[in-house]
Length: 349
Image 1 (cartoon, rainbow, N blue to C red):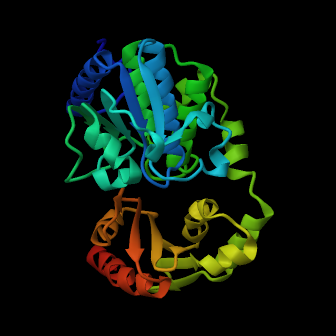
Image 2 (cartoon, one colour):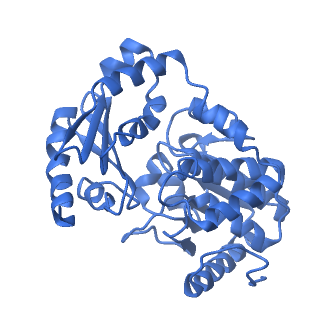
Image 3 (cartoon, one colour):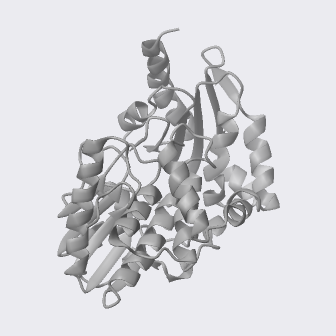
């Protein structure tokens, strides 16, 4: 495998680069030995999970045409509406209905077993397991080959570099899916993870046929009126704590019923809360059932909100993390607010 920096982009750190290349080598060998491959992203998939799964599927098909590749969804649910435009998204299969024992299972954009949800059984009965991810974890899935690099802005960045190392011609559809992965996980290149590597990969993908304007139109500029009504409710409820340093809002099941908005449409509402001037931490809670709440956390600066997410049983990155809480929204707020306040106090005034 070519390892020069002219051949592949990659992390600036030489040790990270060599480790990534070694991981690519191991995964390349695993794929080469497999006749059936299942690829799955995390539960409640976002643009990075879906784009990386679909992009990797086509990369494998291009490099190993005899392999039979099946892209899986970790949940018993349809692809979120805003991602229905992604090339070949209609081929995604709910893990529950996938009955094979694949030669190779590849976890993408996750590295912890519980994040696979209904796909856990597929992973456990697979002959070999590989991971391509950018989430830090102390308890990753046992694997036969992996690249877990938290310095990468998105799993899509790592998948793109894998394609380049394989010498695969990146088609327009591969480029579009991987560009969606990078754009959404960097918040349209507004988040702190928007480093030079992310921009280099984005430039490469655009040269290969990706259309940032199409992605932006579908993901960020095609909201249903029902969602906009929900967004209005969430904006009207924004409140702050700790002299404005924590911004918070929420959405209930009743809000979804009243407005007609779908649950998956509410994923981007954390960015509405994050936009409050002077805030350093944003918290958005949404009720997903009578006794279950999902929480999204964002940090504008150097505060590590993933520490709080892990305390709540979740995880993520320093600037973007999440968790699931058993209870109602009031109980979730009462549980998460004290550790957020401690995080601010530890950082000093």
